[in-house]
Length: 366
Image (cartoon, rainbow, N blue to C red; front, top):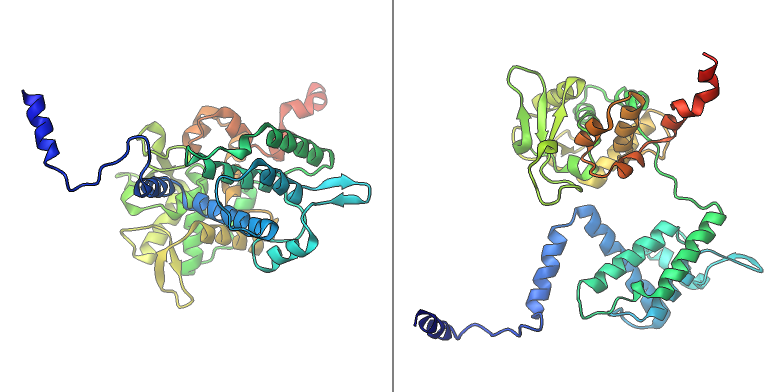
């Protein structure tokens, strides 16, 4: 029989170690971790690494032991109590002893002493929860009802105290013009102008998308002065699926700025936006952090709010589209949003003040 002969042939392959179908081999677990890490953005990997580094340091100080999973539920509850601001008879307080808090700050584990914001607490718990989920054998203490209850009450307490997480201000057309005015004819000035306009005009690109912008995905349109950029990988398209919304336009002043940068830099391949050292030598690709620093530096030169970041370009594009009554479907096509509620969350206070609903009395008198 063909099947029997096939099994006999397989039996000859005896030099490979046999696996237990009910268990994951250690090398397989490592491979899974590598695949998961490789499929995540650099920013996500860094934030996870930072969060787990903090968990390890805090756990060592609190329990005198090296962090190992799974963690029992009481540890999660203690973490929340240590970092959440609460009201006591003697005023606001946190559970983390002052000397331990100071140690964490001095050694770079915390940016400043005191309580965490609600978003930081949630992020730390989310990362730990994912670490437990990565191995099915680990029960997830972050999903315990007691943890959910404590987090829910912490959220409400923060809200009662007026401790909200306000979003970064948006770089709409007016502040964008002020930023561009700071870009001179130097190599850095030309690069920064091209970078900023590329990010804003093409739909408010994320800083990681700008950092990874590659010549192989830049399409010059013959017979025009514009470009199309093929955005094959993004936060909302992590599998590289080719669809109608992967083509991002780089037109008008943005196309001209990009041509100026290409001509001045003499780059024709590889990553589009590069580092420039003090001697004016063009180096490796920019990192997402470098791009954020460029935006913040340009905003400072323009005398704008220090709260502006690279993400303000994205929220600014959406806000400006709303101010100019661009159809939501067209805006989503460029930004890549799949959920209209997510898109609307980017609208900033400028749109609210200028909305018809906010001016009903004035409009009724016209």
